[in-house]
Image 1 (cartoon, helix red, strand yellow):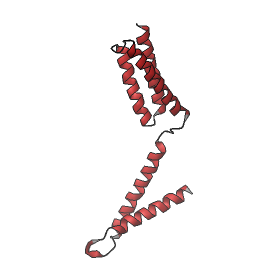
Image 2: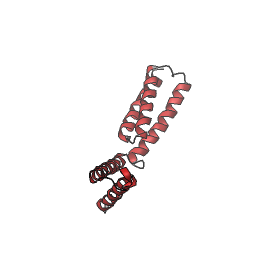
Image 3: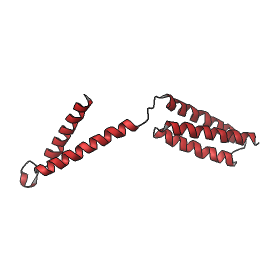
Image 4: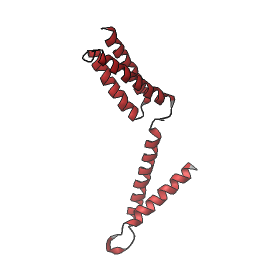
Amino acid sequence: MIITFFAFLIYTTGRFIGYSIVHERDTGRCPPERDAMRLLVAALMTCSLAVAAGCAGNPNSSLARQCENGLSVAYQELDFAKSQGLGGTVEYSKAVGLLTAAKVQSEFGKYPNCVEKVGRARAYIGRSQAAR
């Protein structure tokens, strides 16, 4: 069924691209080699979009929830550490950098990387509080 859908999508896209542009001298049709090229380009673009859509992380997965919850807790811990005067420590700065990177990873659906960075950031926050 999916293959049928993509075949239909490629066919209609190729027809639309091939016939929507009026050829020289108003013939109303592009030469056959241009039709084939446009169909090939449309097929490649459709397949690329399908693959790109399938590669995005699932925002409803347990890793996504773990990432978002970890970011929330880590930012709360970071605010608490800053309120205690630990905002200038090296560990604090490393934690800020890791949390920023984790947020970017989250936005791109790279949830395992996000969870790992959040864990490292929370460890740095803990070290900055313990050093005091």
